[in-house]
Length: 155
Image 1: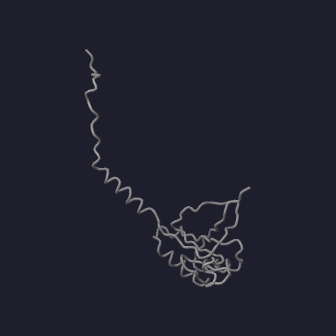
Image 2: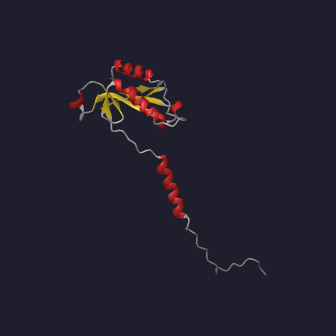
Image 3: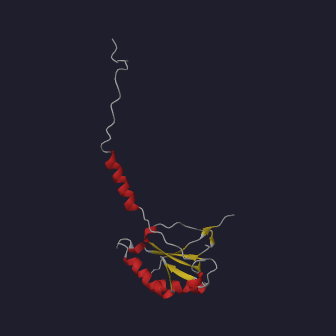
């Protein structure tokens, strides 16, 4: 007598899917909380300079972006053709950078404030005087961690 029955009379039991909607909702909720949807509408055009020794940002959530370049075609009539500073979604003067940095830093949690970084996305043809003005204001605001955006040099 054999102990194993080779007859195909048994069917595979059905899989219980009653907890599947809860699992999908939990995953959806997780991604909604983790993902940031904020995008900045660029009002200035910038062509990043080329660099050789580049590093990726460690904490992008603790970073504020300042764009410096010539206004794009839609905004050239309003702001002229000189280099302008863009803070979030508005063109600003150098004197407004201090308030911008303080506001951005105050929105962070206390734990993240030591990691606050300012990323300068600057057109490669921007005069150094504007960049120096912004850096001096950042120094007064104690925003001492500054990174510059660049494209990787290709050989």
